[in-house]
Every structure is written in structure tokens, then in C-alpha cells.
Image (cartoon, rainbow over all chains, first blue to last red; front, side, top):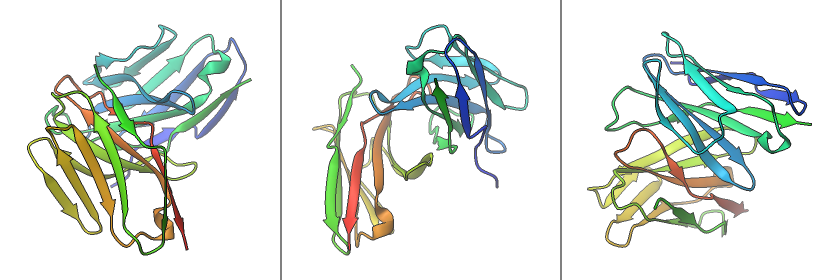
Length: 114
Length: 111
């Protein structure tokens, strides 16, 4: 079974641009969560999607948004990029149930904002 | 509030046991997890424990949970150089899929 796939793996953007990152979950997984990892702040939760609906949201500005498609694939978008958005963005997928919710992570997309 | 604390560094000799510790604050945590991250990679799930368990063993890994003290530990037996990585403790409560992570413990294994 294929794992969580994130594309692209690396991305370089300049301040003010916008970016879209993609995540394909493990087959059969219906929940997708996104995390930002930086050296200063560590791993921080961005949002979680289930059945095309945002189920949970972290403390990030509105420039960070996401969506989930009917096939459970998810995208996150960051508009008006700032230098501080440089980070590793990790996507995790899990089965639908909240009870166990074992999250499996992809390799991440490393975003550099110049 | 939600907070997870870990020590930042641990250095051991190959063949020794490693013990990585974690404390958390949310008493409603239902599941606690250990993830491993190698350089340039994502997070690899190592093991998890449900909050009504005290211990879980999985090959070289032993997880101990002291719910009263909100303390979690991961013991790696016969540590190998390939175990060198950053280890993250994470908790999840009943409010959806959000994981709260510790800062990560960098494990260095010397031959």
C-alpha cells in the first residue's frame, strides 16, 4: 500500500507570491491533517479535513487555507508569502474514525521563501 | 492548556539502552504517540499507547505511561547507529485529529 504522498518535495518562492501544496493520503484514509515544522516553533497543527470539510483548525492567519476533494486528496494554499513561512509542511492521513486516529505522515514539502 | 515537553538531546553508546522522556499537561489525552524523524524526512510512526494502558512493548521498543504524573517514556533496547534521529512525543485528546508535539529529542548513537 502506498504511503502518504506530498508534492512537490521542494519549492522556492519569493515574498508576496502564493503557493499550493498537495497531499494524497493512504488509500482508504479519509482524514487529512497539515502541520508546519520550523526550527523555532517546532511542529504546529494547521488544519484537519474530513469528508471535504474542515474539522479542526490551528492558530494560523487566514493566509493559510486548505481544501479536500471527494477522493480525499488535499491541498493547502498560502497566499502573500512571508519569509517566516519558510518551513517543512507535513501532511498526515488517518482513517475516518476519531477514536484511534493513527496519523501517518508524508515526507513533507520544504518551502523556502526568499 | 496543552503542552508537551521533552529534553532536547540524548547521547548513548551503541548496544546500550536509550530512554527518552516526555511530559504532557492535558489530562484528557486519549492517545500518546512516538514518532521518529531522520534528516530530510517526514515523521515515521514508531508506536502509540492508549491512555488506559501502563506499558506497551513492540520488539526493541517499550513505552511506559504514568498517567498520574503525565509522564511518557520510550525505551529503545540495544540501540544501533541507525536509531540516530529526532524522536517526537505527541498527544491527542478527544477533540478531533489535532496532535500536540513536543520539541523533539535528538538521539545520537556513538559506535
